[in-house]
Image (cartoon, rainbow, N blue to C red; front, side):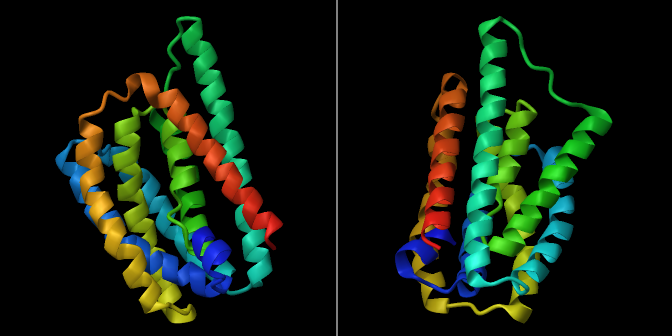
Length: 230
């Protein structure tokens, strides 16, 4: 959605529904590729995905009640908050590792509660802003000390489910630009199919913390642009 609004000046409500339609084929192809490479944590993925279905329905309802400007500012604020959480968790984990300590991931009820919360938020984000909802999903998985490759695969699985749910709701209330959908998906599908194979050949362990930081910085930059451009 940010690219459509910032660079192509597409109305926010149209950008939401169009982004969802363009994202779905990419998510499906990417999820299948990651599954073949063993990069999906099925149990965690189901927890977040089920919660995300309810969030997506709520988000689709929210999107039709607010103005285009409010959507842009809301997305900007959300992006900044998620970026802050990722940087905070990354800093804490970096300090722990420097002291020779390994963070203990949540288990049992704590994992269920944390996963459901992040999944629900991801669903709301997907339904409201038409984005993949990847940021809260990845923030949640990172906070559970899931390896980077598994975060990439599992987040795509979750995003596929929430996108299907949100898109179903937006078909009833949204406006989709099919021309934009075609151009957005044609190149992205090729990248989503090739990406998991490339990732499988890379040793990501030493790069996980820097990757998280750069992801957070990029997210924060998009958030600021959305707020400033309003």
